[in-house]
Amino acid sequence: MTQDSALDMKDVELNEIDPEKQPMAAEDDDPPVEESNEKNGVVKIKLSDEDDYNNKARKFTGLSKEELLKVTDTPGWVTVRWAFLILFWLGWFGMLAGAVVIIVQAPRCRPLPVMEWWNKGPLYQLGDPDTFQDSNADGVGDIAGIQERLDSLGNLKVKGLVIGPMHTTSADKLSDTKLKEIDQKYGTMEDFTKLLEAARKKSIQIVLDLTPNYRGSNVWFNYSVTAPDSELLSQIKEAMNFWLDFGVGGIHFNGIENIDNPGDVLEELRNITTNHSSDGKARVLLASANDPHSDNVLTILNDTANGMLTARYLIHKDNSSESSLGERIKQYQQVASEQDRILWAVRPRLGHMASAVHENLLRVYQLLLFTLQGTPLTLYGDEIGLKDLPGQPADSSPYMQWDDSINYGFSKGSPERNSNVNENITFKAQEDNKHSILSAYKHLSELRGKERSLLHGDFTLLHQCDKSIAYGRSWDQNERFVSIVNFDPDEEISVTIKHKSLPEQCTVVLSSNSQRKEGSSIPLKNLKLVPGEALLLKYPYSG
Image (cartoon, rainbow, N blue to C red):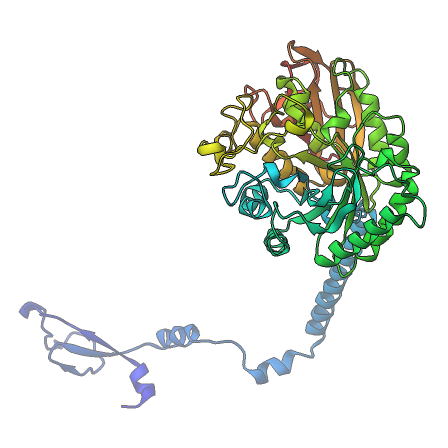
């Protein structure tokens, strides 16, 4: 049987045909029936012409190539093809023109300022390593001890450690001052090399304090360092080149306000750090003053450098009124809005913030440090509220308190200074407490590092009175922030913050008032602040 004949037949299988349904012989009166072949219940039936046509129709697979070529050049198909081609290109050019219009009309992004490592987070001042961490149980903090605590410092998101002075010197004796040598009680050059390498792995720079006469009555030996042939200035320059070549990220000098023409000296010293700033390794010159309210501090600041902010500059000199704080903030922001390779800090040589302000205002000054313009500089222990010890300034620096082990984790030996002033204040205890000063420090440090408005945004004073201040930070189309603080440690106050750029409500980022829920919205009208409340809010850019 051929394939064609097979397609013309359909097999129908009759399963278990009843006897009465068996085919019967045709009677004479019946019309003739087409002959069919029948065998064992299988009947072969010839399909009609109509069924044959439908079967072929179902197998149609489209026009062949030859058939398509016959119609491809007909006028109708040519017209259709041209119509679709024109529509395609019109649509394409329309989308292109729309994209160009959107780009042209879109607001321009503000160019980002140059940000060096010290602009991106706080600096942490260890000062004399003697009080930070003892690594060999001799009761004296040392360089190796600093390295042991780098993990904890890394968690604070600090970008630099200001260490020292720790060079060899005798009080008021220039001849005994060796600015390129480390006092052996702190460790060796090998210890310092290891510290530099370990800190660099955590993206932390080391700033070395080279204040020459740090153990004497005058940190500059009462010498004039402005003369070109000054013996002291020559030693300082030589030491700066030595340590910058060694790998430190910057140099710090204290007490600059006590020398003649500090602007000229700093400019000369800045040239050295600038010459060592290459290949993406910027170096910083940090200068500080002991008297934050000296008449010439802001003059020096304006003439030489900017960018560093400490709590002592914000604290009123008689600690009895905050009425001039807004003016001091405005003065500082004017010079802190620019960037340079000299950073100024105005703080005393010794002293912790918790000993200078009311206990209820610690978070207020902490918020100001991290949300104003300029690089925050905090003293070791300020992140946990550590206080100075009673006694003379030279004996008042407390040991860092890490945990509840012997000597609060500072040393396994027998430190000489003990006091109950900082009883139960430890780094470890505050790590697990989300309402602690340490947790607020970490939160603010992290925010400052990732939010452009806080990192390098513009400053706007929104409200100022004797008991409160509010200001905004904004950058281009990024999220904006509002800081509001109550300087009264004992009384609740109510404030209303109004400005053309502000919405009626803002979102809570953090607050020293534990009753405020993070992420909740609060109105800026008749806003009640509990005693000593530090409040940080945010709102989106609205165009």
